[in-house]
Image 1 (cartoon, helix red, strand yellow):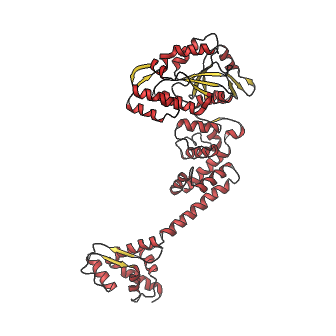
Image 2: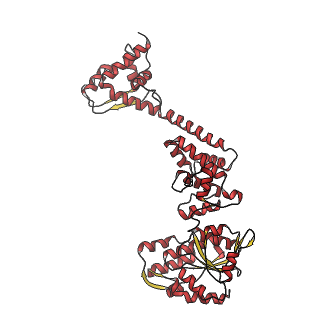
Length: 432
């Protein structure tokens, strides 16, 4: 009988005796764990078949035992005392399960080797480009899109390869590299012939954001506003029509000089709904007075504007929130050295807007009418819920922190409209 026949007979012997099923299973698991034949296995609640099989094979009485602790080496030794002594127990185990039993460590090492080769191929395909630098950094640090890429590798490698290629082409051809701005669907179409390829809920859209974050040296954007701002900095416009800011009394300049539309509206003291696409066409925005008043509510904006119909008061309205268009406009004004005066509501959301603007523009922004006296003058009968009051804990500016304590004490909101006369008086005194 040759070795193959002997091995087949040995495996048949163990398989035909159901008393060895759990023993072999546990030895296999132990081998995967250790990477070698060794250690011990424990069989609890022995069945009658197992008691008979182990007693006969190991020459040890298990008939009156409820469990068994078996040394793997002892099991091997027992095999060597049979006619199968020249057969490797590893061969028996492999044939028993009809597969090559590999240790967990070996399996993991082979997986990591394959994964490394996969990503190295991706990096080499874009060698000496911004995309290659992005990928290299990801796998050197384990940060940015690392977890996302590894997770997607485990799901579908072929699909991931296509996604990486798509995003790498996008990163290497971002509009800001040639001084342009493009809407997200147009950019996506140029790169992939699919206007939805980089939608924010798509895999490529998420990877593109990771790439943009790396290029800008920022954290992965957490919400829509941050995503839009990050993409804008690389020349991609998101929601470029409905993302707007209301303003008046400002002058815009494009590449050829004074923008006629902005000039006309400025001279007529009429407000402009400046969308992100409008702003993207401008090189500079200026306030001729070197100052600009920013208010939270459109009703206040229009009342202030109407009270100064004879002269173009530099005025901006955030519309109760901070859209990207607002930041783009104020960033351009700040770049020109404009002093910004901000006034808003005395509630958690209003203070959050003021705090965000103060944090962004530092000494270039003055908190306008944000004293305790102003709050009391603007006080309404509207109570603030504990949930809304809790939002005040996130305020960072010291002067706003002090004001937030007053609001917590009163638990009532104050509104700009209540102090609008004071705002108009201030503007008149400043003599724009």
